[in-house]
Image (cartoon, rainbow over all chains, first blue to last red; front, side):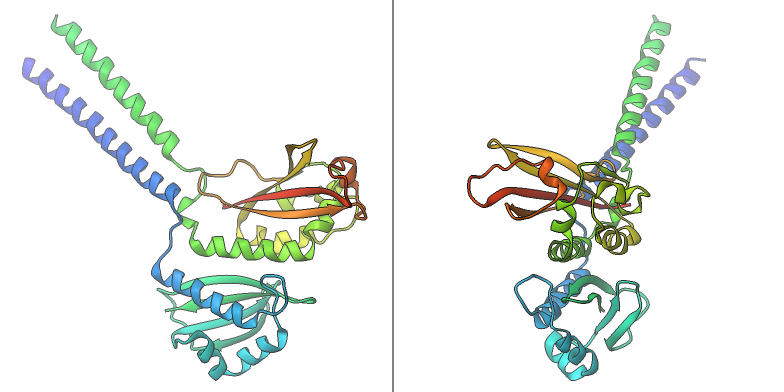
Length: 135
Length: 171
């Protein structure tokens, strides 16, 4: 009788301990999410390359305002594009606000393990979404 | 004596379990924290760089002070403005459609102290929400219903300076 009771006490203790450890794990992952933005190396690289492209296209005083002629050049001349990004495993896809394809340059990207960064650029009449993929 | 000890143990165990459950409940995020990436941060800054140059000032100038609850998806969005504005269209295309929620606050100075107004309110943001600020300068020659809310706080041709604070997060 006493042994049984002792066994139950141990089980209670283990359950409480299990809950406590789970609590520590959840709080740990929660605080990791709060403390910093998550990013992978490829996403970081995609954002860095997108910044290079936006800088190349930039014209005027406002940030993210672009020269449309330069956009046409970069979309139609892969050599210019690769000169600007200085890398080969990159794809740039440009869409308008409704998601319609404006143009694409670079190799076909793989279906997984791709760093992705989206940018918004504009000129006086149009808004474009630049999708940069790196792998 | 043994019965009392077991009762005490049971109370202590129940207490530990309740405290643990409490920690678990407050630890669960209400929105998906995992999805906030550095790319979102870059994107949101781009969106507001664009809006700043396109429609932000015009929209704030003709804002009538009524808080827009629910963002650009709200049915009564246009009731908060005394002019037609493209803000709803751009916010919907660039943020709502990409599953972002956002609050926009407008802070102005009144007799030297700062007062904050809710402009667009989508709910309470999670702790890791992206936040940024834009400055909108209103001059004496700018016209709009915002002037009935925001006082002329400067002697010169400067009317007031608005600090537009934006908080964006994934939903």
